[in-house]
Length: 156
Image (cartoon, rainbow, N blue to C red):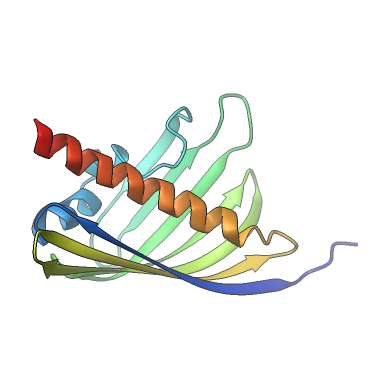
């Protein structure tokens, strides 16, 4: 018999990017731009990616190690304020097992020298999958990739 439970957690990550809010927002709002930075494991191919960035739209991505467990991200966008805020809910699956359901809020603030991004995730981690620290670390890796992308653009 499978034990059913939910463990709840919230984390917030703040970053300052050396670019304007419209450019940082653009990194989240186009499929090509987001694909360049969003995934925490560069060696994992993205085998499927649907990206319909609008209120009521969805994003669906499948990634994972070649021949290994499929990591499935399935999001629905609820609120988009250009250059200021994105709110979406998503669930994550490992193969066919739902491991979490989350609400994510991304806020963009114009600050001296760039954009302060504040990401808050509120999650329900399901049925024994409670690697909350791993989720936060994966999110930090993706945001670090975005930082490197902007730093490379500035250097070019």
